[in-house]
Image 1 (cartoon, rainbow, N blue to C red):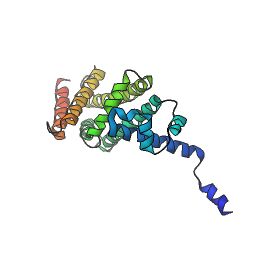
Image 2: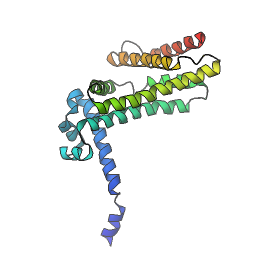
Image 3: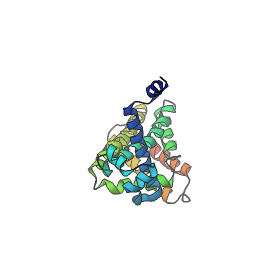
Image 4: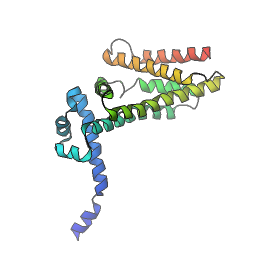
Length: 209
């Protein structure tokens, strides 16, 4: 009888499979943080997860599929923190943009290990269809978020909505450039200075609208 009750308390097989799959995704990210490109090795990922290589093959059709899912999860985790900060900000478009900038230049984004992982993902993007698909999906969502915030700002100030997509791309390029420069040399400038540069860019944009 006790054995029957114990069996009933076990998680469903599907839940166990999803948990193991998620653990492998997180192990892949940890492997990339520790070893860079060498962390792409299925053997290293298996060692990081404490499982056999066979278990990875059971949950993913190939290594690229695992890395693509790691890319998606890694991006969503970082962007999720930024979007949550935007959601907590006051309702005004300008305040939401300020919250976006502050979160973009705050942990966990400001971490050299994060750059290490992105470099591996970016290096695979040209040759992996799986990575290309995830990159288009995630990058498009990021540009759309910025474009929507700029559109709200333009609407509030009565400015033109023309070329919002290009402005969103330009602002994202500025954010990416500042973030990359900081990760390469944190002594070059303070995160607060990066935020101030982004704020100034938006102010100039509003003045010219």
